[in-house]
Length: 306
Image (tube, rainbow, N blue to C red; front, side, top):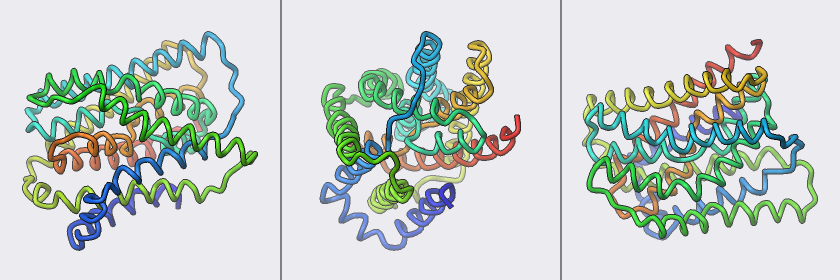
């Protein structure tokens, strides 16, 4: 149920966004998107508890390799395939932004555990890459988006917005968790986070229905090819890197799934803070999310006993 809640909710958000857009437009027009993004990372911080993980030179080396792949190589792949496929500007923007953001907040950990990988390492990579990505992403994004077309973003403004809407609520959530003294939190909190992502997609699509219907079947096919190319290449690169690092099987699975995935929540947060029409870009984020979720879930079921 936990794995199906978000994808089914996103499908429902798309349907309701087309049929009943008024509610989504109200949310968008009243800073609802920014409030919901703040809530997502507040809950993420609250959910993140202390876990034992021995910090040594090997772990530091693994983190550096994962950071280079996830936060540097991935956006360059997004830029490369946006050029090779000759994507229109706003579709290219969606692919590059989704490629540049850090790993998913929860699904990478869940899929790692499904594959019987190292869940503690998956949690460490998720948190550390997200924290590092807050600082590196505005500058990498600026370079890649300028290379894609006449898109200029205010790096400093985006950095401060990421600090306020992502890092600050995450820290506050961690403090609340520490004060509460709880070793475990209810799994229902993850449903709240998923619900927030669903609402963001609904609100974003509600104000962009004309842009979405303007895309042709060829556009959707091209988007899918670009998304598949980026994610599959990331899987292959991470698998090869894990082999070079001589990681145990459980650690390899954690690196494979966490470092290859991208968080749609942060991609939507970036889009919400860029002064462009982002309707088409949101489509790319949705297709990217669905593709990585379904492909990686399938791979995890295969790798369970390996």
